[in-house]
Length: 408
Image (cartoon, rainbow, N blue to C red):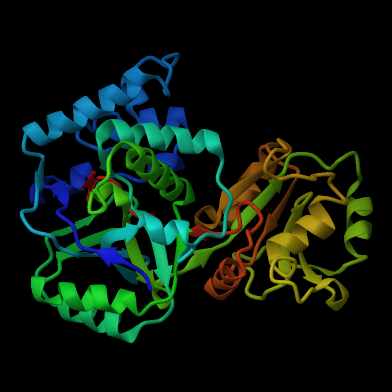
């Protein structure tokens, strides 16, 4: 039984929503973040990445950085850029990209559901990345970046969504990357129905935002030691929750920076032990599971895994595992892709053209175009309480930060 509650949302004025909405803080490196806020004083990224207001040698994890973020957030509220709703509500958030739309329910998921594994994970988190968001949430007394959750097909919730999206949206704008964003406030009469629907759902799944979720939970545990308020907002975390049928996972491609002292022929010979290899024109995407595209020395190959290496194990059967276990580790010597600086990753939104450009520029020597992990595979891994290899899923479009805020 999942708990998802309505809340008094702090959100931008209608005329400011487009200026405020920002991509998640963690899609940028420091230099990119500073460039992204240039000339955009009201972009929420100024609050999410407060170091952008300072010199490049400023400690982005200092107390001063988080205090600046809090002061800027309060300034935005004082100026009336943000306002707080007077009653608890759910919201609907629709994102449309390349003609394809997905609509999620915005509400608060339960910290206890996370702790009790009703909210299931499929990725590890890194402590140093958690600490940053713990300090950000704790200092602002607010959750500002929603967690991207999914649930298995549910027609009752889809019906409620369909009924409410017939209304005039609160926000309707197209962001710089061409994604259309629309938001509706759900009519109050549906609050009990939505809560009841989630109570009949046995599990929610983190699609994206594992570090944000873990950080919100740790802030809650910290505050529980100091306060005893079971109804406090810190016992929940801001989420946008989608029906699995709405979602589309893109591949997470791999680029290897050197050939591990091997020739092209040696690499192809080693790969041929476990894969059928076919040279062909460059393909934009890989349409079959257990197949991989490989760019090597101005040539493109399709690698098809032989039956003997395809396992029934949930983790070992993932394409990212097959590539790691039979190519990246034994041939290129990449034992731990989390820490090895000889490999980098490219979200599928960049496409095969980006992989080609990396090789042509010399920034990579071989690249692998992946078949995307499926929602079925994600659910299977999470249901078995297992973890996917790093960089297994890439979701697009990205939820914007700053549209919905939950003050704790």
